[in-house]
Image 1: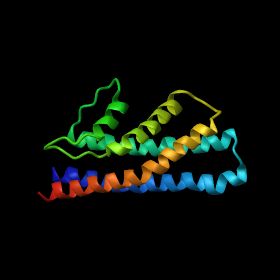
Image 2 (image 1 turned 45 degrees about the vertical axis):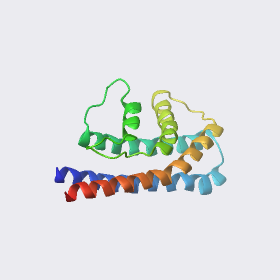
Image 3 (image 1 turned 135 degrees about the vertical axis):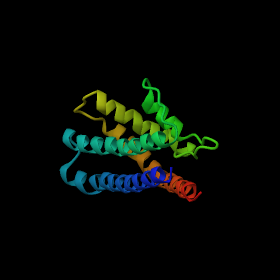
Length: 160
C-alpha cells in the first residue's frame, strides 16, 4: 500500500497547490479585474467558473481518497455522499479529510457547482456570488489545514 499512499500524497500536494491558485485567482478577479471591467454577465461567468473549478478540484481529490480507502460510492447521490464521507473518521481506516466545521461551507460550493453544471445560466445574482465568495473565504484556510492534517496522517501511515 505504500506506493498507493505515496501517489495519494503527491495528488494531495498538487491539489492543494491548485486550490490555492484558484483561491488567489478568485481574489484577483474581485480585487483587480472587477474594478476595471465591472459587474456584468461576462464577469459573473468568470467568477462562477472559478468557484466551480475550486470545488471540482477538491472533489476530485476526495474521489482519490475514497478510491484509496473505501472505493464504494452509491451512484445515486455520490457527490453529496462523497462530501459527507470525507467528514467521517473511519476507525482503523482513515481520519476525516474534511472537518465538520467546514462541511456546511463546502456543501454550499457543491450545490453551486451542481447548479452551474446542470442549469446553463448566463445571468448570475451578484449577491449569491458574494455569498459564495464569503463561504470560500471561510472554507479555504480550513481546507488547507484539513488537507495538511490528512497528509500528516498519510505520512504516518506510510511509515508503518
